[in-house]
Image 1 (cartoon, rainbow, N blue to C red):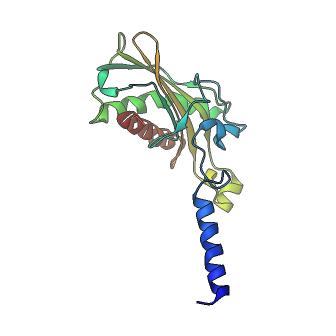
Image 2: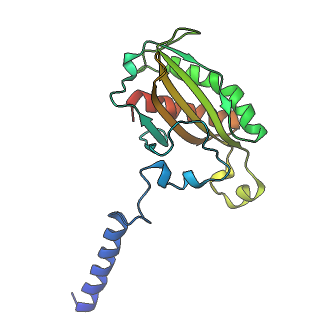
Image 3: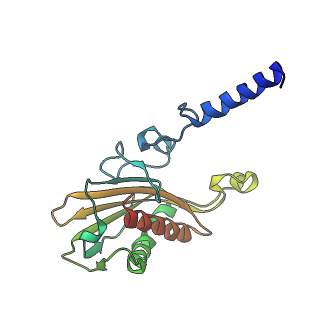
Length: 196
């Protein structure tokens, strides 16, 4: 191999390694506070109690679980009506459908031993829709992320004493806003199942 070819190969290898080994511009944010999501102006951060400590989740976008959290330690759960910190009418409509979709997700889970009850639950789930959107004309033409309807969801879990045991924030898409809510809550339930 010629010296020039060797230099080209080494230069390309160096660029590939640099991109994959952690220069901040190339690496995905591991904390919500450092992410692009944290800088979205139309997505309020007014519901969860601790946005700064949210970490990249395995199933949902951003999660924070209390140390020692074990979903199987709770047997009963109550689900409050979802709030809507998103200012759009779509956010308020999405919040109206979210509680039922979360209950379906909890009841349909084989890994969560929770029974949904009205009062006296071991765990209380409080939800919020921080944004919901229909695609705009530009998104439909150019095919960006907003080309499908979507929803941004947040969930807080409080134990019987009122201590927060988890916080989750997730954005999802679907064929309709309600479909996006359902899809997002399925991912949130999966995050609760794995605790990440």
